Image (cartoon, rainbow, N blue to C red; front, side, top):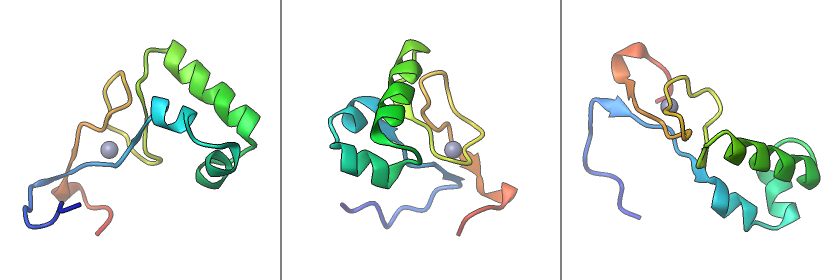
Length: 80
Ligand SMILES: [Zn+2]
């Protein structure tokens, strides 16, 4: 998908909707997250109970209550 060509001052983490993760197969879940599929599904369930809608990216320290990244200023450093 064409997400190049527009350079903004902020960077955003990529996240996955919990509903999408729930539709993944056990093997897919285990390739994306640590632990076994049963544990991962349990974690997805408890995230939903907390009102979250997406799986926050590892290392994201600026997210709203649903888990969506709110953006990070580039001056803070970080990933290329
Ligand atoms: Zn973030």
